[in-house]
Structures are given as structure tokens and as C-alpha cells.
Length: 75
Image (cartoon, rainbow, N blue to C red; front, side, top):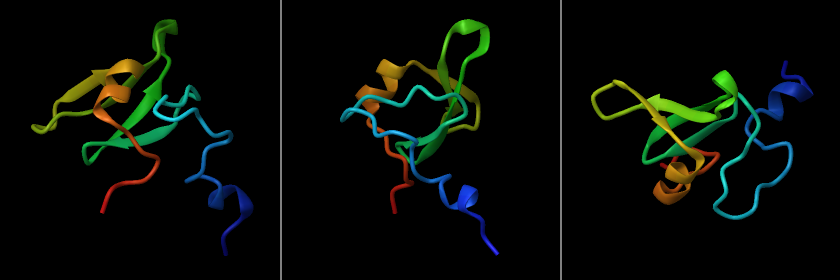
């Protein structure tokens, strides 16, 4: 049985302005077929994911905005 909390994991707490990535830590978004998680280590937020070779890749919010992003993986 699924609880209400689990059904809310795919939707943001508050909608973000068009094109601006969310700012809530641990948020997962998709960009160019890859998942990115927002980390706030050392007070410097960054989006962590992997490149096409599986190596760690850090993006700024501006990098993610330029690349395009979504809350859902593209099919």
C-alpha cells in the first residue's frame, strides 16, 4: 500500500519559474537523459550526476538551465 508521502516524491513542493532549477536539497531532476541531485555541500549548491562515461559531473544551476531539465525522465 502506498502512503501520501510516497506519491509526492515526483512532484515539487512549489512550482519553479519556467527554466529555473529548484533550490531544495536532494531534489532530483533530469537533463539530457541523466539524473542530477542537488547537493548543498559547503554552502555551495551544485547539481551532481554523471557524464556519458559514468564519471561524476557537477553542474551549477545556470549550467542546468542552459542544458534544459525536467522533473521527469524523457521517454
